[in-house]
Image (tube, rainbow, N blue to C red; front, side, top):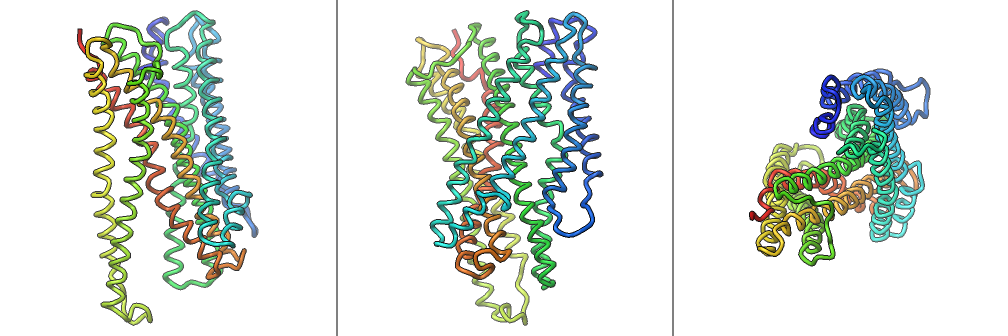
Length: 468
């Protein structure tokens, strides 16, 4: 909305409001098209129905309607008689965002669905032990970063170039950035459906737990296991979707930061030279923060898990009848432990995320002194660049590896490589245990982290510029 407002200042007054309310219109349209897609999602009658394909069929309906809606809204809100073809360029940017969203879904499905080779490779590696399972899962997660990074790069550059040329090369300020913003809105124009797929995962997971604890027949558990496996894929899709949209959004916030610093300092900053030692150290600090923050998140999960395990062992000692079913365990104790840990253990990572960028920018501001009054701002700009790039790739690695490990276990539980209780299954359980904090804590936290860093530095930008 801010980019649209600044861009529309160069346009006739009667069309200015359209550039400002365009993001609101996109999200309102999202509610409608995603709702239609969800209502039209229906499993065909018969056996051997793939739940993932059912959801994808509904998503394709929402995707098509969103594509039509994006073009219609661009014509309605972004058309101006002075530049009659500008709205077409922005429509293309929106469609680039939609295409990016769909490609992310296909790539994530390939790396986390057990119908494709990567997860089968992890299951095969489980045959030779726990260590090879972990190695294979890490390898899949690392390889899975290449395609999303390429997709983001192509989408970002294409949207920027198409947007920059929307006004016929008239040098309209922020036209390229607004094109990127429209692509981001296009990617988010089906986010309601994607979030619905995300919620599908925990629901099916808990349904499987209820079925197992209530000792339902095996065929019922097989159904919930299949749904749970699809839920792992949809959760990974949503996390990848979030990281992809965050990377596009952070590019916009980074540009806004440079504009804000330029306005405060009265000197235009067009680039950041990482050959300057202080600037490079600022960038290195950003990349380091991503790993340190992730380590804190993983530690938080480990600490909570240890408390739960100790509590369970204590209950087994105090209530020996739990094992033969004559006594019931006290579930409320475990629930209390994980609830308290969810609040307490994340205080430290939150403080690090807020304080480190302020500390880095302020430190290099004073180091710069009088010889470069913008050194602090340049260092924090490099901090943002490195943290965003590292955070995006590391989040994709954690999310994908975690989902792949989980589905490799589900694949073996279907009877492959010996099924439940076999040595490969035990190895797969180890991989799943390693993957849970990756895909459920550290990975999802990173896309929040990179947005938070961009927002904090933008709001606190005056702290990084030395006065005259």
